[in-house]
Image (cartoon, rainbow, N blue to C red; front, side):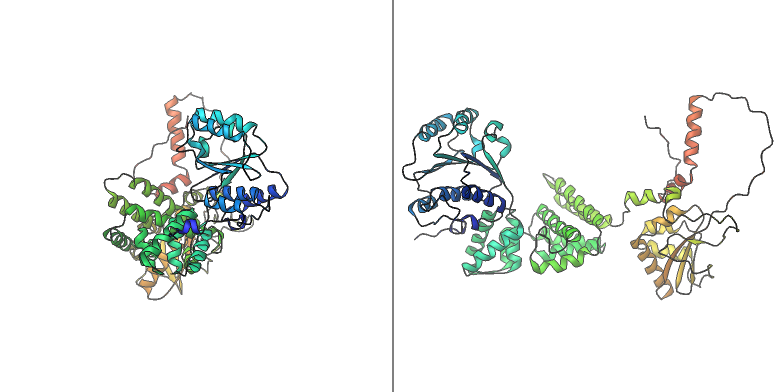
Length: 552
């Protein structure tokens, strides 16, 4: 007997064997059990997800010698002929090559005659969206009032091209893309039955490359076996598929987390010199960072994670070092880079620029955090007003409850001061050093570094309170002092102005209507003198006086 490819050899023959389409299979089984068989079905979905396979199983279930039954025997003449594609009562028509009105007219003539042997005459029309408008119109009447012995099963990969008049006359089933885990488990089963040794990483690479199509996955496994024999190696599979090694993807992610631009560019060069496509690297990085995001949100055991079991622990460890905002930002940069690479004359430049942008992305503060820092009295950490029955406090108060005040500032230890701290911090983060430079002083008291800001400098103080900035300051102070220090950020209390005596009564001034431009100038001046605006301008180091525009 001639060789049979895996996709045909392992094609499901019963509803129970269908992979990834449980809801559809269960609905069809219930319809058969309850004798509620429709005259027309429409199966829609991507290639290789089981549309034609399900159509054949339904045809066998309807015409099996023991049927109609939800468990066709696959042994009677009707079942065997459907499996081999030789049944005279189950006709498969390829609409891509039989798309004209003449072919549909022949079909309409055939519909008039009963099945030669079986209960039902079943017409499976594949790629039905390829029919011409005239052919659809000719088919419409038959679908509307078919004979009771006829069942139509239409299949399409492009549902939007099927006329609404056809859709309304069919029971519609959507076939979803098959998940990575389902494809992986099916390929593992096939490899075991075929006595092929293949590791998790190689199987996972094939499952990822199949992109939701089980048939494509089986075909790729067939190719891998042809290349490697009964002992399939991961390196050979990756070379066959042209995919990037998993370890290299993890190394890129690690360099991004470590903010190591040099290492990221070195890894990109390694991929390019190996002859791989830059877009392939970007797309596989998208898959890797998607897995990190899914693990971060849903946990490593979620069906949303497309990775083998041995990768899950590493994904969980890496995702714990990143926030959802970080991962979302990385993903957006990769999507933009993928778009820039399409048709680009300088693919290497776009790849390197995208990777460096990912390294720099972790240094960015979210816009919401920046705005919250300038939200006035509602900002967390705003000092409490002084008690009515006591004198105002003159000592600095902590900017956040996370960093408790432990008394008045102590004298600075030799070797540590604001200028030296700023210089040390600037080696890791110029942005943090710039915000730190807005402080009044930085002094060491015991095991604590206290950074004091003037009243009204809540914005700069709040922006420094991110874990990343605090780590940078702590590392810089530890290098200067030779020992670890706790970092506390403090803001001076605002002194209430003394109660002014009541103004002397003066005659009301004569009201003079100012010109429109004078009114706008006064309004702009009032806005620019607002403490929150001033704080915002200080953080972003605006040198020139900004222009204030009124929104129309």
